[in-house]
Length: 461
Image 1 (spheres, rainbow, N blue to C red):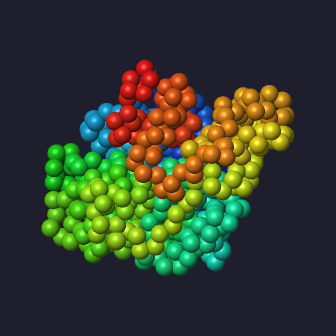
Image 2: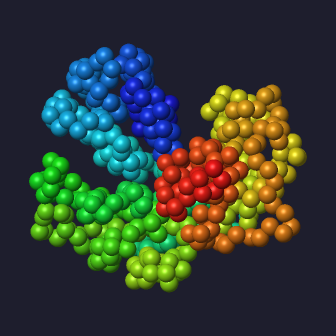
Image 3: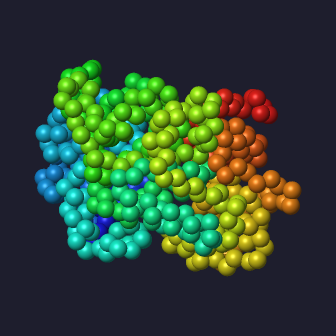
């Protein structure tokens, strides 16, 4: 057991929910156990030291409040975050009185559970231990390795140049950075490298998916609100700007933010001053902005879809991550790193990789980039037989030819739409397989299809 990881138990009767959340938390550096029944959950608690319990308040055949009361009595130092698909505020209040640390209503975003965990006493204690114990001067120290997705590796001159630019950016903790690159290239990982290599490393890295913020939630999500400021505002709430004080606010998919929302955020980003909804007291927050996109923002400015003044504010330093097909020499080391990871996770020996397998991978264009390579490696490890991989273990075909045009370094809106249409056809219009091939979730695929007005009937059915 690694002493510097938060040990989390997820107790929820929905298996797909526990699996998805466990994967996210593991990638965030936590040690995770899952249970789908109260009996299994209590067994895990009895046999393993657990720091945090994520508990569904409504479990079949059990009263969630009774479960909460019992575990708090037996494990008083255990932090508990309550989750529920129902908005029964009376139950939530009772849960808080019984010792729950926080409450999240399903469906919630990964950023919500991340922020909730980072507010717990256990997390803060471990962070202080890391601050004292770890080296601070190397680009990728152990603290950094624990925070970033270490699958983002490479040996090519292009990716080493990206690392060098990230290291330079980390030395200027007040300077905003714009990271561009196709979907799946590792933009958030570069953002984390910048944050955890700089002077803000011991403060929060708050990642926000810009496309998920609706007009009605904008002010509350970014600026926070006072209790009673609107229906449902039962407590004071900190917004992203306040949460990210002295840390980094990472705005992913910044191009998806509607124009009217861009205008509301610009002043706060420029002046670092904002006011909670329902309050009159201005607040100051010393945050750094790192944003990312897979679109050509200059073209979007020309098309009146993105504010020029906001682009200038975000784009003080610009780092572009080339797609995987433009740095073929990185495919093999990344692939072998994934083989090591999945051999450990799946309990299989690391297989032999014949030359024809590497040739197939090197000749594939990887529209989903590193994320897609990770997915197809996992699939191949699951379906492979014996200790040797074959080309039949990979559901891909060579797409690189002498006449294959090199894609634009940053996808335009039309460019990404075309990739999605082509991959849908290649996967016989199966959305789950298409999402996996592109290295994104099915929900993300559906959102992009709606954004580009792509329907199955229009492209082949």
